[in-house]
Length: 134
Image 1: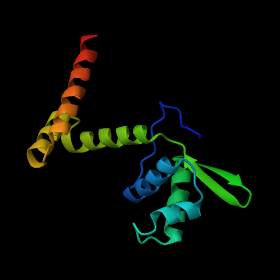
Image 2 (image 1 turned 60 degrees about the vertical axis):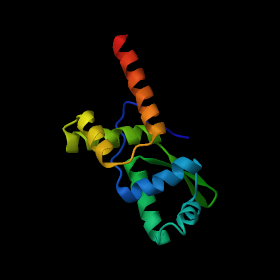
Image 3 (image 1 turned 90 degrees about the vertical axis):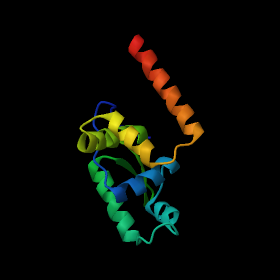
């Protein structure tokens, strides 16, 4: 599977493009018909819509394309975690001036947080503190 160099920024991906990318990150590689079939029942997109999204993602460098016989097979050219990180960073910068604390505090005040989530967050914070001490 082709990957972009880790220091290269991931392309900006629209909400609809995220939907297609999630299918390809899960499947690894797919034809247009396979992506359309995967999205059937979840969305009422026409095959042409999916085809347009795949073309845009390919043009942006988010998908790699390979010709196999008479079909084209598409695979992610960027890692999901890299795209998630850059999208998260962009959101924090735009909405919270890059500050994590007001985001997390506001979310925890308004959303139900499970004991498992709190335990996981404590572990994340403990790991972050260990990194600071090094």
